Image 1 (cartoon, helix red, strand yellow):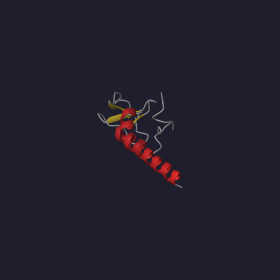
Image 2 (spheres, rainbow, N blue to C red):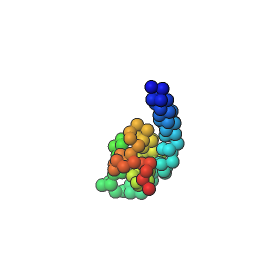
Image 3 (cartoon, rainbow, N blue to C red):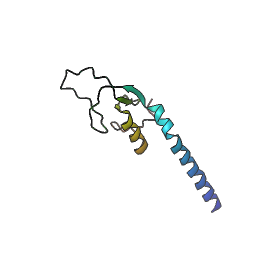
Image 4 (cartoon, rainbow, N blue to C red):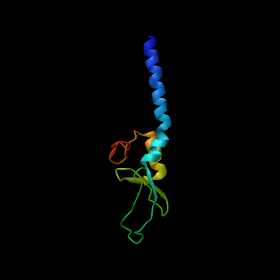
Amino acid sequence: MYEKSKWFAKFVLYCDSLRNDLPKAIENVVEKSRFVNEKEEADDIEETCAICCEEYQSDCMIGTLRCIHSYHEECIKKWLKRKKSSCPLWRGSAFLYQ
């Protein structure tokens, strides 16, 4: 019984350490940039965030994952914290993509 309790305590501490390092890991995975709408005349092209479904506004902050999918910076950070650390579009791990 003692060994199981000891193992469980180590497991809980390990999970807690992962949770505490998550914000740092998310910062390393999300590349930040400003959105510049180069096609303001083209009405047929809409660039929207796939998470919140809102159009990108000029000069808003965009977060791009290694898989090259882009979202509002705050949207993707919240997504990675709440969801299973995967890209919302292709569902692959945002942390393991090379």
